[in-house]
Image 1 (cartoon, rainbow, N blue to C red):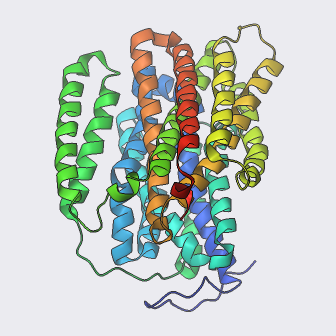
Image 2 (image 1 turned 120 degrees about the vertical axis):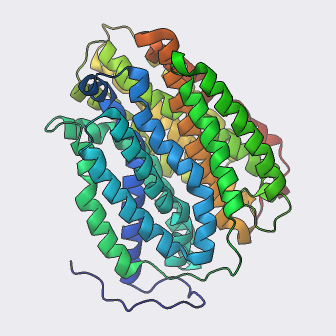
Image 3 (image 1 turned 135 degrees about the vertical axis):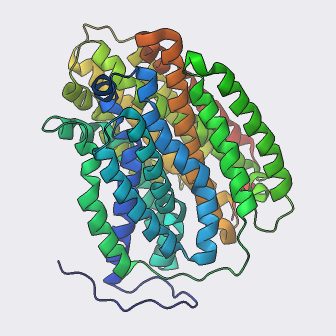
Length: 465
């Protein structure tokens, strides 16, 4: 298949999507970039015990490899989304791809855990450039009449890649060491950059000044709060952690005062006043906290029960497979049934599956892992598609791009908090922390189910664009 022949785009009013075949090349670049960035949030989870052994680090310290990546994305996600409106989504995405690819190379060659964590931080900055504008690029790539299909494909890729990370990691670790989990991003990143340069759409730009003060306050708020939570995982850093959390709360207060009067705030406070949208975002945070806590804890728990790293990945495979089957079905059901009910039932299934995994005996057969993992994956699939649809439909049509950014931010916030919670449990309970983490994940999924059901009491008018 030859590269697309497209002329250099010029600024101006956007057309209704891209012509064929450029549209296919553009969506391929967008989905490849999203797949790499989402996979890297979970692909290293299964290798954390090996990374900790290679560097002589504790289990709690090794989780910085996950948290550094999630933290970097979260603290710059909304500022980069806002920057994309000013300089163009295409530029932000291409810069993010380049940073992500170079940082992946640095991760593959990292000589110490500290260097690996720093490289992961930079890699997360690149991933934020990709994720922050992906929804907007999809909107400008597809014509309006096909936008629902495109958003569905995008959501499916995000959900599947997030759950497929352990399975892909298992396949890589079966033939190579953990460094190749990062090394494979380099050729894929180069290919994606070449396609993106030629195919991504040029978008109209908003003429407004940048908001560096708001971006700095936003990054400082979430950076201090989340790094403070992570620091609680280390006995020697408790005092520092409390100072970080306190300073983060102070910056959050300043951020709210700075952004509330602005016409285009980094945090869309006007959308958060919509009850269905705010409840859907809360459901998303709870569910992704549960998902990430489980995906971080399960490799440690399964290997604690005496299984190898490769077997661990295979045992976790039913989760993404069941999710891939359930998500399209849930998407169709969401057109006829309330998201609150579907999401509540799905998260109840996740909570049940995680609790059953937490109490799985060491003598259990592989089949015992398989059906419990499948229950979790199917439940998560029934939650995510209806929940995403509720978030997008509850926002005014003109603010759909901002709503998509909040959807990604809620996912990343939940994943970051979930990983930080597991690190804290490892500090408190040592090797048994993985089992307590599964119990915590089950409770978080149960809380998400409760918040989801509350949406059933929302006025129907709140769910219309």
